[in-house]
Length: 287
Image (cartoon, rainbow, N blue to C red):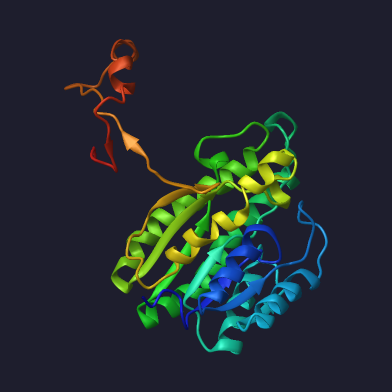
């Protein structure tokens, strides 16, 4: 199997946690990895080169190939610079793992615009910025792999994470369309919903859960999604603690009306409209 051998893969937010594990595994499988990390704190403040440099050192000492990048994916210029690093150092770009993220939690009642904006900029805009810069190269070479890092907070909601959840589900919406637009050019776009003990989740997991939810469990899935053999696109895969499962949206059979219904008629059929028995995947009803 070719896997990712010889491919150039960008991993954003790869200075620690999930991104570091992704970068190390991809490199061990023969990929040339661009290790992007701004080097800031969990809330996105601060910057530095040490985190990315350390991961590059680990990869090179193990016999792999890697290059560090410290640009901010939250800006268009930063996203373009990340991809340019891949082109300058390795001459091509074959995959993007959109992993960079920050947290600024708070209930919606207390959510300030700055916290909303910062999280959307890193997660959703950051994913757009890097992927958009890589997309012309994917099309030209008729190959590309895009991995989104979504979250159960976006798929199902989580108290105090309106900004994070909105950004993470937004990434799924982006993935859905990229999967359609990329098919002609053999570009795959998929999403991972990780459950892992990292700096981002350090206040969630207790001591007993740290080993069980080692981020290393998520990385084999990411490597598979970046591989040449991966031909599926538009998939969401939940991964954590050794468990892997597809998540998909489904639609009920619903209720139909010959004429424009009244609100009372909708109320009368509410149980039928919301009954998920016999639900189907995808979008069977087009209006």
